[in-house]
Image 1 (cartoon, rainbow, N blue to C red):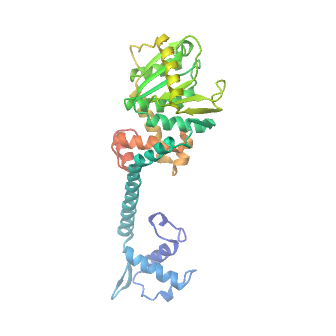
Image 2 (image 1 turned 60 degrees about the horizontal axis):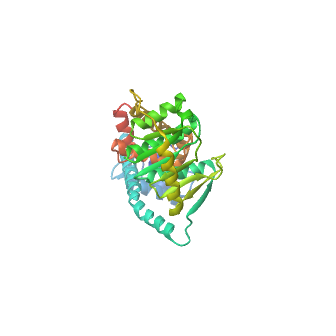
Image 3 (image 1 turned 120 degrees about the vertical axis):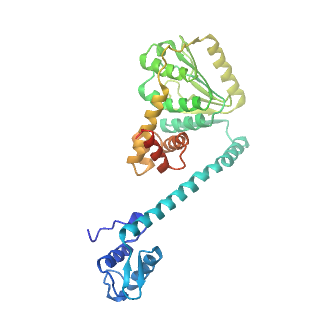
Length: 332
């Protein structure tokens, strides 16, 4: 154990830790560093010694030589300092959210510039999901969707549920059209009833329809290939095209049959807690967001957004505090 570096996470270098442990093993050492033989040069030892004095881990005593601070006191001081530094870093990172409105203004200016395209093509399922996540996150009035598939797969529901619930929790109006055969499926019916219980308006039709999602009546998303939506999508901002797609949606909506809420709607609060518990569990067991996001089956950006929402829901200013509050609530 003598050669093992255990204090690197508290900010000590290998030579600084070796020197501190040397003084612990040799109390009242005469302050002649020439007698210390480490596999390094004298300048590095002098520099490490000065740093230990700055940290308060060692001190000169007139009669006793070099005295090392009791590890119980010294390491606790390092831990407190490290925690404070991490909290300060978290506060600085959180403060960066204030830049979002300015960046959105830049983004909007870019969309309004002459070189900005009114039709954007994106390819690949991961990119599609990331862009839908962004559009749903910034929607603040209404989301209109036509879903021409039959029964929804478990994977589709798992990907769509966080986006839908987030919109509904923020008071965004949601109108969705599905097929009759879809709501005849038990799994799809449970999901639809979950949305309806939260305030979504869902209607069903018998005939086939086009796949599309319209956000705030300004942006529409349609597949590049109607027969294979995973290939890619077109993000349309051209006003006349979006207006035509809204008119198509309204015509289908007017002919569709409303899906009535069941007498015993499913508990969405229970699901939200399960999702949050899973995020907290993965977060506590993973050292990096990339690993946690992969385990959750979502992008890093989506995972971090869920973490931020969870912190807001708990009233936490940082992840450490969020974990403590979640534990107090019995979520961990």
